[in-house]
Length: 107
Picture (cartoon, helix red, strand yellow):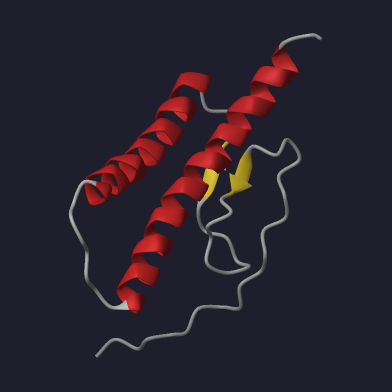
C-alpha cells in the first residue's frame, strides 16, 4: 500500500520582478492559485474578460425575464457569490487591459 505524505508547508510566492502574473481578486484564500498573465496579448485578455462578464449578464437577463423566483435565501446567496466571482475575474482582467493600454499611449 502506498504511503500518503502531507504536502510541505506552503510558502507564499514572491512577486515576479516584472509582475507578469497577477493573482485574481477572487482567490478564496491568502495563498493565491489563480492568476492572470499580464503579458498575454490584449485581444486574448479582452476575450477572457468579455466571456466572463457576458456569461453572468446572460444568466441575470434570463432570470429577470422569469416571473417570480422562489427559493431559499442561502440559494440566492450562493448564486450571488457565483456571479460575483465571475464578474470580479472579468474586472481584474479588464484592469490589466486598461493598465496596458494606458502604458502604451502617451498623454
